[in-house]
Image 1 (tube, one colour):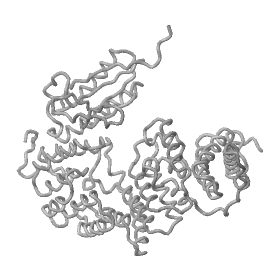
Image 2: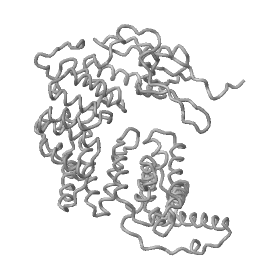
Image 3: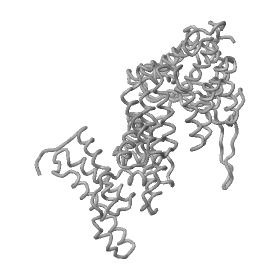
Image 4: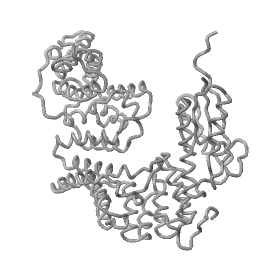
Length: 136
Length: 405
């Protein structure tokens, strides 16, 4: 088994398909509910398959921080204008193969949007580096 | 000893029930709270190893003996290290006879002002609620080792502080309310735990504010089943199916609140409970007695002013005196206060300005701190932009397609 991080972005990454461009507060309430229910369905389905590890959502607010020498306060940068990539949340899965990770990411990306049509939102898939080296 | 034992859930329940009173006995005998808590945890661990095959005839007495012996060992080791004999530690006063309830004694130690509310809640859940570290960790969705460290650090903070005064009940109530508000995200239902502890405390004290807090919790928690859809979405008070409210719990809350108010020592929790009682009393949202609710918010401002109280008061003003009066009341509150956007949106809708209401709801959604709240706020904006009223009927003259405003 191998772990993968499925990242959803608020913005950034390849240009989104038309369905994923309209902000959610401009959908109908039913479309919003259907979308939320589908995300839960994805998590439930992955849990049933024994592949779900974790899912978290992130606020769009964020700041970059770095060390600036002993005794000095941290340096901060941000929040950023619309041009920066911003992560919206993640799901962590534990699956048999990279193909299966891509399949799960595509399933997530098929979440319904306006008119019940799939959003086709880009999902970034990142393999975890494992803690335990394989026995030689 | 017989070969009989207890195991599984029954053992868990038994240990949970016995831990807090055993700790109370040690503390009343004069043991330092932090050290006593360690010793009780060790005694419980020992019990969980032995009792599955061999449970003692007097389980509580057994735990007291084991914990006290452990405590003396620690004291002896410490005095040896300090190179001086501490007779009092070796032969302590047996202490006053057992009291009916140590809840306040123990809670006031857990809720010391030197601790952050989060640490105080964690410590109280273990020391007074009798939960295991693993259960407390699950309630806060952090690893068990993290929670164990949080509790240890809290106890280190308390160690050496003088704790012989009965403690500030206000600080205890604040911590219990934080516990209640954390709700029930994990496997442990913190709202229920908070109600259980507050109930215990209420039985052991005669402070009407303790009763007020218990009433507030019961009256709020009574709406729990209606507060969430089957799919896990949040439902606003005005939109809840009131048939799903727990009327027995409302009745109990009202009875406790009336008893507290009759003592004529009003405080913030009684005032908040009175507001929730008035909401619970309305058969439909339209029948809500906003004039009385506003009266209680005015009391609350006088008793415990805060931006959050003023935000909620602005909503009550909006209903009692009209949307514009509500907006004027809101103007007194700083825009940056969490929740200000959502209240502004609500009042704009009440005033008939759907466009601005939708904009403020969308803004509130971006600043939301929980997923259910964010989703709820996004849906409010979506609803307004689709030209739908709160009750689900189309707005007169509103767009019905309405996604391109």
